[in-house]
Length: 116
Image (cartoon, rainbow, N blue to C red; front, side):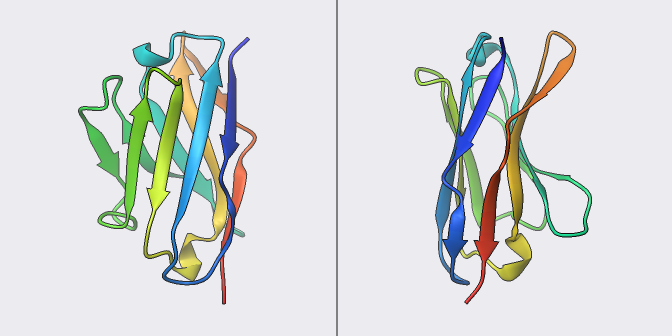
């Protein structure tokens, strides 16, 4: 079955960096666009970044442009989110997502907390 498993979250000080990873199984990873979403306290889940099947095209929410980088390694079935210059407003549960065979699939999420 389709599985998405995130890792790499944690507590970081403002200005710090984290790299999230999402490892996929149960489908042909290289055939799908991959997305990272986040949901902060008391807010709706929002799209943070997307990456095309080959990695040639990426898109970012305005709030993270220039600070976050999405990438993927199709040989490892893994998508990454490199987060730099973190600010408290980045505190959220981060989840990876994909649309496969007309169904949305989500990972369990990983908590990122930016605080001094």
